[in-house]
Image (cartoon, rainbow, N blue to C red; front, top):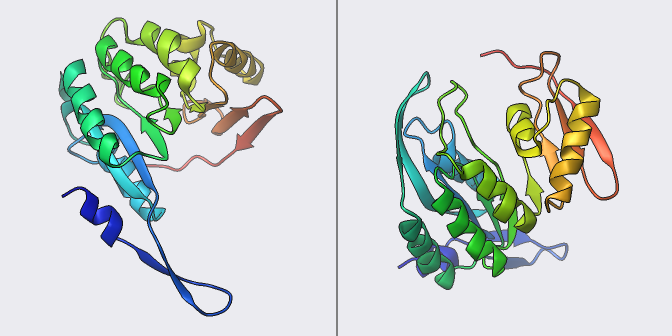
Length: 225
């Protein structure tokens, strides 16, 4: 049944010669937690994928009990269950790219890394979610080390916030220079590219993108709410 939506959900695109062609939406995968408030996790990812015209798919790594103010419980999915979900899905619909979010246990990280190491996930974006915006811890002991040791070396891009970048790099980030140094540490750990998101800066939010060729600070404007 999973084949139907990919083959049937097609969009008509006008060519320059005014003829139409059928285009299959690109399949992309979110491997993340379930946030019932839809502010993060697979529900938020699927909403973004749809807005971009992509065919979104999901593997659930944890179920949380939360609302817009607080996380009251986290129920991690076992590593074997994550692997079974992923194997069943991508055998039928291989993703062009995959984004990981909340990986609540070391076993979850290792399960995802095993697929990435066999090039089963397409281009991999790792969002190392370690805590919620309200401060609730979302990852068990051992997750940080597993991400450093097994997942960074497989990813096209890692997107930590300032706190996560400090934990992954083992550095205290206090300014732009230390953020740039932390990004280079993550690249040495294997990440092809690093984007440190600046929503947690005390000043105006600034994202830092570091690639093999350049480092770019992307300045934004803080939005209230």
